[in-house]
Figure 1 (cartoon, rainbow, N blue to C red):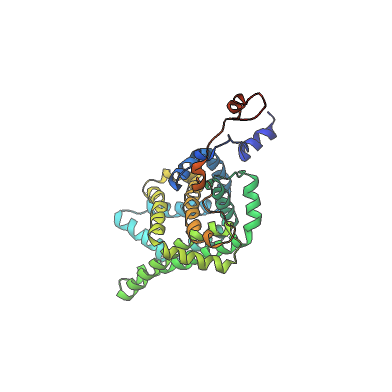
Figure 2: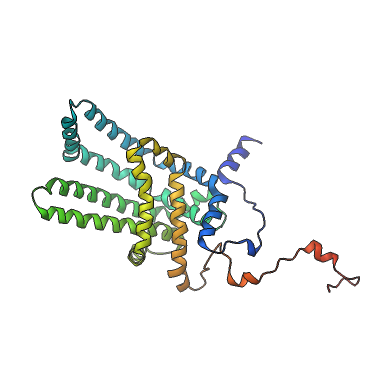
Length: 315
């Protein structure tokens, strides 16, 4: 095998899959999730590596600020001085500088995140997608809306974290700031819910950017328990990383792609229920066994040919 062939096989995968009969298709979305996850597990690792390239500026900037904070902590004389140092990091200009550096890093991820959602959406529907070529096709097709959403995310992140930090500092002076901080947390969580639906919707439907945000808000509120459950699942690895930093390797290996796959597996079902049934010609339940297929009878052609009579007619 040539190097070109090896590279193509590594990032594009094998387009040929074994033939499936309708009775082998998953009956529900739980079966579909685990079946497609098993089929595409190593493809998710490859896809994660491609997306990881776009996160390099983000990780470098976070690492630089982490080292600054770590250096300040190690120079502290005692525990009280250490707490004072951490407090000064978040109340003085260093934290604002951290947020300002995060803005372009988050904006850069937009088109790549749209491509990530597109490829994983296809896999979650048991549709074929090449790791390399389909990623770049989706990147080019959705870069404008992807950049718009990531820019909005960056602005919300900056204002939200800056506001939370400000209200935390001022909370000791008035309970009003505590109330405002609580309200801001609720709004930020709601915005995270919007992101849950906005990215898959962007790569699935031809919609204006404003319609994507509006429909995502409606679904975020309408399916609030499921949105909250997904957010909690997403935050578990983040919490583990906070207490056990080496776990960050999870994101370097498969974390980004797996959470995207989990995201679109859920939204595929939500879109089927609330959007696809209202769109003329839209297929519902891609990858799932249809009711009319329950009566499907598999015919082995080779065996059936043996039963033909001498005139070549089947009995």
